[in-house]
Image (cartoon, rainbow, N blue to C red):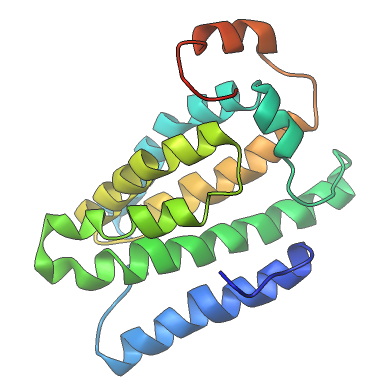
Amino acid sequence: MSWDVGGLNERLVRDTLVYILAPLALAVRHGRHLGYRVDRTVVRNTVLLSLFVLPFYVVGSSLPTIRAYYPMWETSPALAQFLPHAVMQFVVALAAETYYRGLLCVGVREIGFKSVFISPVVYAFHHLYKPPIELALSGPTDVLFGAVDYKSNSILPSVVAHGVGLGLLDWLVLHPPLLAPERVVRWFQWLPIPL
């Protein structure tokens, strides 16, 4: 957390080193796997998790605090600029999921299902600077992603749900909202956090 980065390119380098290569080195050193596997169950769970979180990204993209925060790095809706941005965002999500769900969940699955509760606190700390609604959802999301990955014995479900979701969120925020922001804020005005 103390290695600050200025842009998406720097974030990509840092996250690849810290969250992909370091956990992979630990896994190899200690004879563990981090969930880099694919089978029919994994593909099914990937599709189901991605479909489950899709409405959260659509609704979230209409919230004023989310629209003000995203995209985190400059891009445009022009495909020539947006597609490379989305690919880099996907790698950032792959890095996060390798660390949080791979190293801290699937990588320690021998302790049982309770492994899904290891990373939510750390994950929340990494979301402290984000919009309050995202911080509030980060813990439950982390548990859900961990549970699906634990049951799948693979991080593919959370990688795809997170990576495609980030790209989708940026795409939606770069365009007029699909849902009226005033209506979405009314739906959630009971929450004691800024929307």
